[in-house]
Image (cartoon, rainbow over all chains, first blue to last red):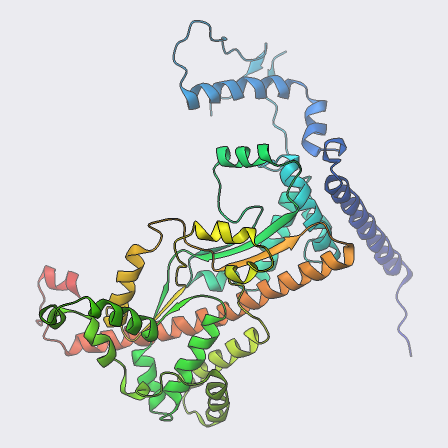
Length: 94
Length: 360
């Protein structure tokens, strides 16, 4: 005698399988895009988030310059750009 | 209204250039199809994707147990040797397109010491042939995955060194002691054929009494089983197929041993090993122990077959070494016990001085 699977559970299983298939296919197509050399056109999750928050670019640029100054120790050259955070930015002290 | 420095969440800490991403994506496609990588490993970076799948695969194949005994690396790389940022940029400037090959590189940073003397004496109580079969078995199974420095290597090194020595120097030298320090159970049986050793181990195993000998022999039989059908991926084996590797290997200075099979710690075999290890790597980096090539410009089925073969090899290597690591831990605990017993019999004062305690 075959066991009957409750309809709701069967539906939920099918949905999960469908979600897995879709996830598999989307990751496969993302990998194929990168493998084909089209990585630049691929949606980068970091870029997407940064686009929504353009201040991150300025903050990143500022931090980058700060780290460069520490790493390469340029000293107090007169022609050096002043390192200023974007206007209105609150720098955390930690 | 002030804004705070934005925190961008859910992104990987490391990003690679598309030159690194492209070969990783090609490998990742096969790994996803083979089920080694999972869709949930995808974070937006192909390098990260492959790394997650590779790490999980190694963990499933007991790399944590292997690491308890061995210090080394197993890496998927786009070059055979580590490169600095500058070297990498220079190499990239000369190349017209991203790499079409990746490498599996395995190397040991140090040799694991396996002091066998006390273990062999325990096995000799079970059967007079068992120590020789055990020694031949463990040596053969370890040689499948690494260079082993053992009595034979020490004997040859000692022979070479003694040729250049005066008789007066030999008196104080450790080299003549290599041949005389062989445990009595192995004399004239040091070169037992591995297939004979396996047959003997299988014959003797059902008659063993006591858990310890059963465990010891059981692990060696496991190592035989787990490494069966695999050939070591020594780098020089690839030279005929890829002649360009020869030039890379010429820059190397020898191959480091992954294991030292000695009788006791600080015995003549260990002394010869220390002498050899001092000179290793002085004229270049040591050769990797494992080297396999992954071709990325192949059809789907060929690529999957190649990656499946590679990961089967990695799985067998790790499972076999995990069994070996458990065996070596038992052997070391037997040796520790032997040392403790011998120390109890030594003439330590009843109330030792602070210096005595430190020595103990």
